[in-house]
Image (tube, rainbow, N blue to C red; front, side, top):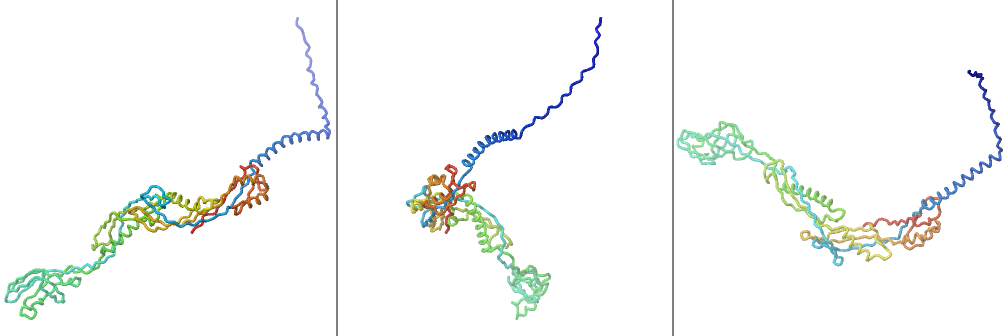
Length: 410
């Protein structure tokens, strides 16, 4: 038997009413804010203290610039540079010398400036006629005078029978185009005054040619010498520059201690030859005697230190040396120099001791203390940050910088 259940309607959900908000008093709110503030303060105070510690102990610093008293020492010394020694001899004032050699060659084109007057004599052929009753003998260099008055000389011996003629080459007596005459008749001045004068004569049937007198360019002795000087000077300057590049900054190579000599030279044309241009070739050797910069500074510093007060020290870059060559024998590797030296010196200051005295001092105290030191010309104090008025206690935060003016020049 089946059970029959009644179908009941679903129960209605009960709707909960919102609880009424609790009322917090103003006093309670104020207490809560104070508690939060206390917590924030408890956290921030250590952080701020730590930050202040870092700032004042690690970032605060003092920079003190000091201009010590200075003195300049002037020296005048003579010294020998000798390529035959290998060590400095302070007692004898000798420094080792070092040879530097550079070889170069060059070919350069030049214009000929010499002037050559080119002379050529006109020449040609004339036929000599003998209308006399006897043979006519004419020796070489017989004179023939043209109808225009131009004189020519025969170039060979003639023996002309009566009623016959014979050709002969003639050359003008002088150079020039005016002898390039057209066909004409020639008399023989040597027969003047005899009955043969009108019977023996010459006649040309073509124009005389080749007569000139012009000026052309010529290679002169001065051209060759000038070319040699120019090329030698070019090679000398170029070689000196290369030697300077090789020696600087470790060696001193004075211009007076460098010489250039010719090894080979030649010209494409010969002296006196007609030419507009010519090439000149030259090979030269440039040789210089130098010395180490460190050697000269070593010996000069020793001289300067001997004349310096024990409380003073030579500035690191405080040497100014002027050289003048008194004599030289580059063939044997000797160079005699005169030195004019200025050495800048400054009063030695114990900066570590000064830091101990300045530690944790106020600015005013520091200024008074610095002014009391011997050998101090002037000072300047810089503190970071700018509102701090006391030198840091930590020595590592104190920096003392000594400032020395550049060396005096001559």
